[in-house]
Image 1 (cartoon, helix red, strand yellow):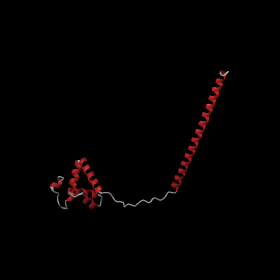
Image 2 (spheres, one colour):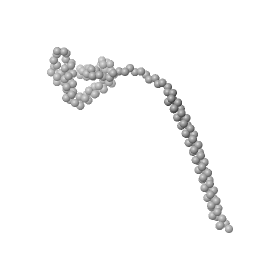
Image 3 (tube, rainbow, N blue to C red):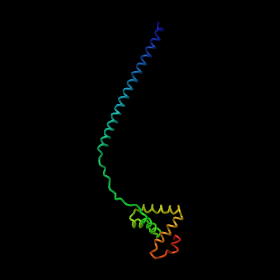
Image 4 (cartoon, rainbow, N blue to C red):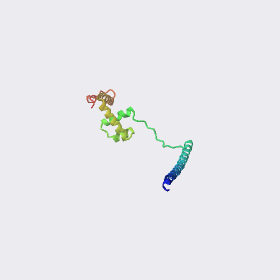
Length: 147
């Protein structure tokens, strides 16, 4: 008599387990939905706050720095001449009203450009030494050869 009831008992246990799993899953889904809603509300509040800030921005005061012109051609030529005369970087920077780093950069650029085109460097050297000589004076032979 017990043997014919076993399939019904197993079926009942299976249905009960399925019902339990369904209810557990439903509860987990509700918990996740609740946490997602809470997270969405937090993000919406942050978004509203960001929109309010964007609509009413605070004025940003930036420090006013005096605008300085960079090295123009005359300053560059003067710095190269002073360097050729053997003056140190701090003296050149002080004479031109520039920082020592700017003068170092200028010298590096000049050296790189001199390495890149020796013919242009020779022409610049010859032109600079001609400019160094006074009016009515002829450039010396050493100045024409590029020192």
